[in-house]
Image (cartoon, rainbow, N blue to C red):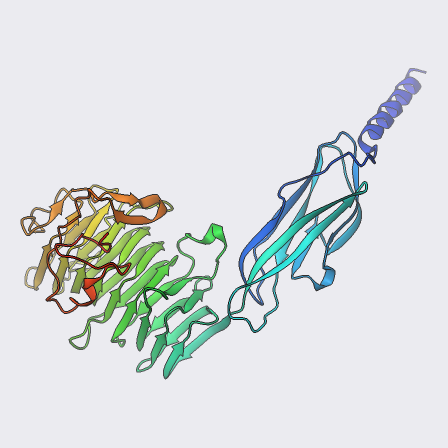
Length: 462
């Protein structure tokens, strides 16, 4: 008898529990809550899917609510696709959400190509019908047609234009004696681990109004400043006469890697009016190279903004090296110059000329000069630079108009604003550069503002 009583009690408790959780709320006043009121995708390249966005639907009521229909408004014609709690379907019926429970809706965009060069908007919406209520969640994406390049080799004079962006898979190679001209406003995006290999000549000549972009193909907001998304630009010994002007190189492992000296009186690479940022290892890594650079901004690199090793020839005028790292920890100086490689005692000739630059950051030592050779030429001329360092007295002639440990007072490093405050120590300190080879170009700063000597140090005049 006692066993029968326990059995009946268990049945009653089970039935009561089931009735509480499975009661269906049919009142039109009952509400479902949605994790967002709209879903926006940043630029989506045609023919490629996007990352997944998540919509969560909550039932905060005590009883279950049944969704009569959950669907994409445009159905199979949509540029979007949804997965409803693990079910790949653009619509589903009679979805029950228990009280104080929720379901997930996963959303992706995949846009078909068309003939437009500029970004275009595609739209749809998720429709949720329950208890006589209708909820609409707009879906918006910015589509962008593109030119896709996989393992492409440039063998002749070739030009990339401003229209559709180029997306590189694996590698884009400029062969010896070939030239790739990149027109103002062109955008070159690189898929994961892709790279630009330069054995010939790269001429990326942008303008103030139409700069050139070298970046990752992940344009979503969360990836916008993420380092290490592609390998970078690599300039090989056979290459010559490279120009990078009014460009932005960002989000690679090494932004620009340069091997070997120039074979003539011109620099191997001329880098000007360019922003080099968000690189996992280095902005510029040079091995016994020949680089001239002016009016450039370097910031947020994992180890070095500039590392020039194994000697070489380097001329840097009016550049800003800002050693601020908001996504990467760093223990190395912003600028490292050496007549040897990292783990070698073999030294090579070294010649460095730095004028009117800012070398500053969060570390006490933002410039390191390492010399191991005794019979090699080792020439350095640092004049009128702000440098953060406490041990350069024997390496750099501080009496040559340099300013050690005088804060340039950047306006807002966290927001990427490396202009200097009106009371900055960098104001009116630069030596006159009008008689140098690049004097005419140096008459304006990175933003096209007229430079007046004695100039403000770094890439910005005002």
